[in-house]
Length: 365
Image (cartoon, rainbow, N blue to C red; front, side, top):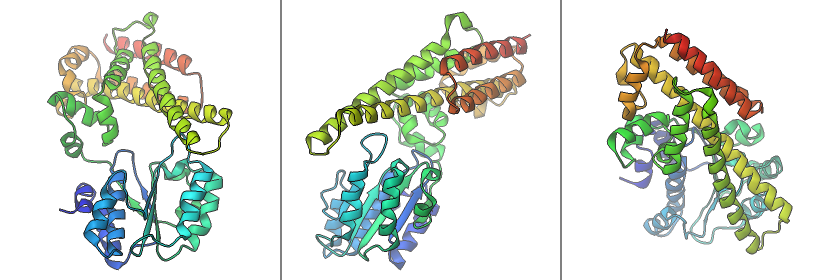
């Protein structure tokens, strides 16, 4: 089995599209779009390797080097944002200008941009000419989990390749650990392998515990259970900020010009973005627990996500109206939508906790 076949094993539409592209001759630009954790990165590397092998004197050697991560192949340029955004100068130098240079070997060059939505409008506008009039040897692959954040002028000049969420069995097969916890992580991740792996880490377990404490009917608001969820999100956000700061410092030492304020602001943006994403994920875990309570209440235990907490779920669902659990889950989803509008996180979570307690108490009467 080739690397492309292996990486698209659970994406049959993607495999069909890319196989057809390789037979007909690859296009100048592709937009791989779909949910996080769907395997876009692995497929892009395998597809890039096939493109480079197709124009090489020694296809097997070109393919082998292109598949390495990081790759030593001189005609494969792989760009990932070191912070919240791609730097404008980096995109200009490593993609826009570099795309005009002839291949170092073989007949083709490939440029892969992870998180293409992280390009600023300035970078996207500068890339338009490259996409409109690309050299025949240049091929661009843009990866995006938020394609709506790309300018329409960019998206319309790329051939779209649609990815779907990974099936449950594929996510489970890629995880290691306690079988029940692995099954729960796979189901709670909604097909996102990265999130499933995160749930099996110490930080992921801590976030999940905080989410379940918020959902617990027996937890009194006086204990501020929402505080644990906020602290978990803040801790993970701080770690992301520190990692971004380290990466940005390394770039500065390598010659990338950036002021101390720009570096600090960029690192903080990364931390805030990660913190917000983790908080939202925590609320989704809370909603999943309430959904499971409703499922237990109607005798649908087979569809429960939190498979490793069945005993706890059964005890919490005893005497609880399933409709109340469903309404409580809707309250959590409503809070997720409110937080997108930049309302106060602590006030929103405190209000949610009181509303959940009232709903669960009334549903248990």
